[in-house]
Amino acid sequence: MPRLFTLSQARRSLPEIAAVVTVMRKRALRLDELNALASSMRRTTGADGDPVITDDSAIRDEMNKLEGQIAELIEHIQRQGVEVKDIRRGLVDWRAERDGREVYLCWQYGEHTVSWWHELADGFGGRQPIVVSEWA
Image (cartoon, rainbow, N blue to C red; front, side, top):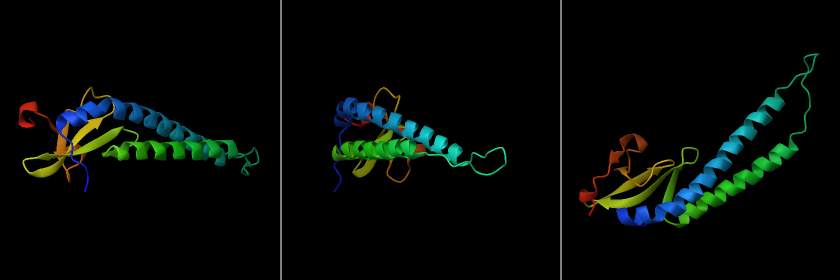
């Protein structure tokens, strides 16, 4: 059974989660850059129109390293009971209880605090602002 958080617990855990999300996002964005670079290298052609064989092993090595680091960061967040929803957007959810049902408290990279919630099935598009008095 997933851990349920109160609003105050989610907010107290945010500084640590936000720090990990920041690093995770940087790694993911760098991975995207390397993917684009590797892809462009594979499409390179010579003056005669034939493909140019390039050695992208250093890029592949860095990509593998980044993928491993990202997986470790996701695991670190999940061990706290927090769910990673979108790595590049830095979107995470804490399960909580509202009116006797499970919902998500939601935070995205760049937001100052946990100030949104949504139903389990609704996702980001269903986010609603938290009215603190309703969560006491």
